[in-house]
Length: 258
Image 1 (cartoon, helix red, strand yellow):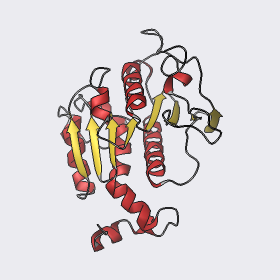
Image 2: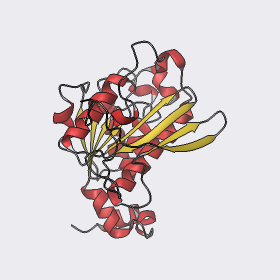
Image 3: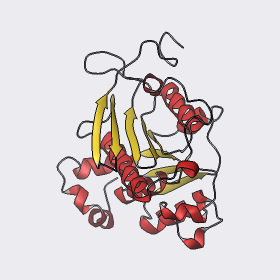
Image 4: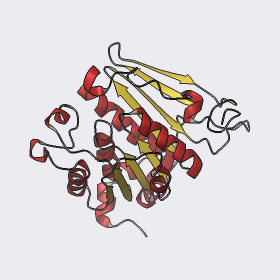
């Protein structure tokens, strides 16, 4: 189906980009993306994916909007306090772009339901704020062969990477899994939560937007993605560093350690 005249005007700045153009915008229009978490990272991620013209956005979150969220989750306003994030996020997306279909799921994703949830989507973007969810989502994406864009923030720092462990690199080697990078979650209490350690509000907006950019690049297919590369951000020094990592043959998911 071709773009309507309204869509052509809406996405005009994409359409003139040689790397996107009409074919790329059509790919975005047909794509189904599952966003895990509608909080600090998920809020800006959803905004930019909706603005970009993603066909379907699934939102998984079991939380309500609270006053302390508003310092960084600018998708919401004071009038949204006490209401489910998935509902308020859907309303905001519809105001921003009525062409986007929203599938909301007010629940907590875990190891029992993760595979069923990710199965119906083309790509998953995880902006959750806890290790249990990150491991459940990454394991599910591995088993269901779904690309995963995952990020984490804390204080003044952040990290971002993309995973396609069900594929091989140009040299024929398996792509790394999340557990090649982080074999197992840290002991409970070893890493302070966002509530305990705090987080710079603008940092979540920046990283959420970068997650959206990475999702768009994965769908459209331009540039060098972050598969096998971990982007590290230190906002105190405004330093960006990318380190490479590879498949660990002893990893506990797909290697000898499974």
